[in-house]
Image 1 (spheres, rainbow, N blue to C red):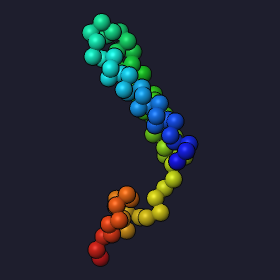
Image 2 (image 1 turned 60 degrees about the horizontal axis):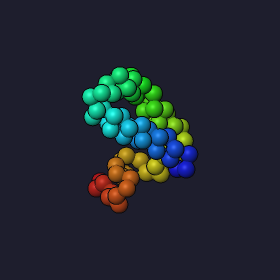
Image 3 (image 1 turned 180 degrees about the vertical axis):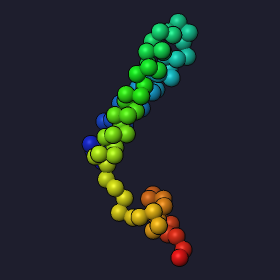
Image 4 (image 1 turned 180 degrees about the horizontal axis):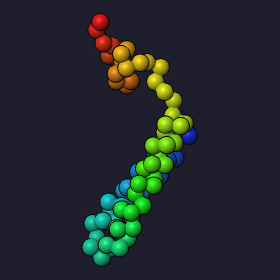
Length: 74
């Protein structure tokens, strides 16, 4: 979990900065640049989470929400 905190934090910060900058009409060129580059941090984050994340110990049939103590009935 420690390995994926940085990609999640940086991607969230990138998207937050994008939202703030996109509200200003004077910064349209920068907004266009951020829109053009936005797939890069998102793909990087998804790749790092899939590569370094820890899989769930439960299968989908056992528990389809991993953060809730719910078990399917047979």
